[in-house]
Structures are given as structure tokens and as C-alpha cells.
Image (tube, rainbow, N blue to C red):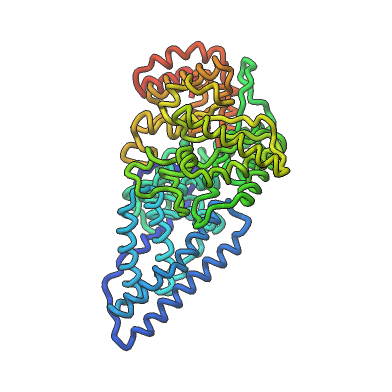
Length: 572
Ligand code: PEP
Ligand code: MG
């Protein structure tokens, strides 16, 4: 028996046999073909590429409609790579002029492109290398007449170097019960999607490919990041108990669907949902979310060559508003940039420090045409139900005023053209930049509501990249500075009667619920997957008693002290 530890990326546990998938690009040494075999080799290469293309087409047709939009877009990206003339001509050239075997040519071309990707500053674009590896791996598999879809995966745990977002739904439909990867990060798109699909996932388990062999039995705990290889009787018993406990917990949580979100002493707390896809909207509706607190529009813009036009955006926003049938929907304007890059050329990939660069509202103000198209679509959707507009990455008063001016101008134009646009659409600001949090008094009169984006606020306040594993220990909301700033923002907002929510991941973590309530928060916006857990945590606390404990929380000097407060006060 052996225990390995990775980072917990998607909760849930799984017991199954390991299916090891070695990285696609291993062990393809230099091999040349005879001059008279070049044409044959080219034919093999083309056949393999065609087969990979055909497989991708079938996959897209088969899974159409069953996938969140983002996954569909990743499949599209893979299909596009398989059609990329630059990739294909370079491969032919390598076989023709150097007489490389098709496999070796693929390897060489892959390494060339890897260098280009490596040189990119943008973390998101850099991570597109995974997609390229995936596509090249598929062609390699056809060249070696291996079937690319791993057969008989039912009940197995996939052990791999990395998993592409586009594979996740397919793996789940093939019966994979959990995934562990030797690389990857907790905030990657794969991790976000795995959470959405409830697929247990552990990432950054460094030694897993060396320590686990095909067929080993594993217990995977996506909640703690632990992997047990060849579990003993005690582990199996523990696992069974844990499964039973989880099933009971799920049943109990299910009963909270129709229950109010109210503390023991009768305080009503508002739970809004974060959404990226139509599925999220449906789930939010079903679980009784009071509205959407954050609809991330940038997912509409990512992974495509062309910008979505006004009509396309209008339909998506309108359907989201209709999907919540009368509960308010908060549409956040484009927050591209930093780790959320795009292929449309909107983002400057040459920025030295993209996280400190042209992202969020800065990008919108710098690209007025793009922004106007989006704002027009949002304003038109406001005719179909209550809608609020949320501005990401706000730093200065001038920015919110500029957006407001633009909204007034566009509203007048749209009405003049006969469109219905709601009166007094609330406009809010994300509080993610420390300067905006500290100087909130300077622009609070310009906003109708606030939403604290702790994911970014924490990274900017602690100077710790949210996507960098090397500073994962430091990147934590449990730093006194984070709590003090949260308290200050909440207090200022309340003094001005301005509604304030937290919409970062922190709001969806039930271990943080008591702490946020103690800091004065009464509105949470969170992914529907954790809504019931947070509702339960709220129903178990006495708000008056918690608030009395706030001074002790704010007096904690370090993370340990804050954790101690959580354990003793909230009893978690
Ligand atoms: C945040 O920063 O907390 C947030 C909700 O925005 P995003 O995660 O989309 O950057
Ligand atoms: Mg953010």
C-alpha cells in the first residue's frame, strides 16, 4: 500500500482500477524512411489525420446538446487544430524533405510548437499546448493503430499527465469514476468543469505516473487530494464508511432545496448563483437561488476566432434572464485578460504582466466597439426580466462613470430604434483591485451594488498569482489583511445602503460561511454545486452570537489563528 498526495481539485471520492495514460509524446525516437517509401508514409499520415478528424466529428455529433457550451467549444478548437493548414503542411514537409517517419515528424512539429507556446507570456494561451498535445496524440494513436478512445473504462480511475477540458464529459460518459493527473492546477478550466460535472479530480500528484501501474486498485479522494494505491482492509472500510456518509449527506442536503436560507436566530441570508452555462442557470433555478449574482460573459468570447455579434450575445443574455423567470440576473461585462485570454485578438498577448494589464473594464474601455456591442446586447435583454450590470476589475471612479455614460448613450439609441430597455438598470462594481476596496468611498455614489471578487482580490492583495502552484500556500483568503479589507468594504457598503455580495470561490466554501457572516456579509453568490452546503451552514449558526465573535476573528494575527477561530466558533 502506498499513499500519494496531490491537490484536491474536484470533490467526491472514487474506488477503481487505475487506467494509466502515458503522455502522448513519449518515446518517439528519430526514424527515417527510405526514399521510395515517402509517398506511402505521407499516405499513412493523411489517413491517420483523417481518422482523427472523423473521430472528432463523430464525438461532436454524439455529444451535441449534452455538454456545457465551453466543452463544445474546446471540441471545436481541437477540430480546428486538425484542419490547421500550417500544422499539416509543416508535417508533410518534414516527411517529404527530411524523410522522417510520420510519427517522428509529428514529434518534431509538436516540439517546435511547444517552443512557441513556451515563449508566450499569457498563462491561458500557454495552456493551449495541452490541446495541441491531445490532438497530436490522437493522430499518433491512429498511426500506431491503437484506438484513441480508451475502451472499457467503466469504473476506472484515469491516471494521466493532464486532462483536457474537452475530454471530461466523454470520459464521464464512458464510466470513468475519477481522475488523477501528475500536472494541472486547481483553477484550470478542467478543474472548473470537473467540479461542474461532479467528477472527483486530484491534480499535481507529481509522482503518480511513476508510482501507479495499469490495473492497480486506487482510492481517490478529491476532497483531500489523497490517493491510496492498493488499499488495505482498513482503507476499504474507511472508504465504504465515507461513501455511506456522503450518500446520507447528499440525501439530507436534498431536503434543503425548498428550505429558507435563514440562521438559527431568524436572519434571512441571500444566496445568488454564479453561472457560466445554461446548465448552471437551470440548477440555480432548481435549488432556489434568489437570482444570478455573477454571469461570466467572457466564456462566450473564448476559444473562437470571431467575436460573438450583438444578436448572438443578445440571445444568450435574454435566455439567461428568461431562464431565471423573474429573479434578477447579474450580467458581468467582459472580463477577458490575464488567465482568461482569447483567440479573437482582443487581448494583448505580449503584455509583460497580463494580470496587471489590459483586463476587465480596462479592456472594454480600450475597445469601445466591442464593449458597445456587448452593452447593447445586455440592454436589449433587460426588456425580458430583471437584470443588473456588473463591471469587473474596477480601479477608479472615472471608469465607472465612463461605463455609465456609455450605457446612457446606448439606451437612448436603442429606445430610439424601438427596442425595449428597462428603466434604472442597476450598475454594480466588482471589488477585486485593492485600490477599489480601499478607496470605495470615492465612487460608491456611482454604483447601485457591489460584488467582492475574492479570487482576484486575494491574488492582488497578497501578490500571489492564483494560477501558480508555487505560491499556492500563500494564496489564501485566510490572511488578516484579506479579512480586514473585507470587513472594511462590507461596512462601507452598509453605511451607504449599497447591497454587497461576495462572488469569489470563498462564498461557495461552506468552511468560510461563518467567517463571512461574522464579517457582516448577508449576500453570497456561489456556484450552484455548493449552494445547499452553504445554505446548511447558514441554517446551523446563530448570527448574533457570530457577530459578537467578530473582534476575536479580526484580532487573529495569522492563518493559524483564523483557522482556530473557524474551528472553535463555527464548530467546523
Ligand atoms: C473573482 O475574482 O473573485 C471573480 C469572481 O472573478 P473571476 O474568478 O471570474 O476572475
Ligand atoms: Mg475576478
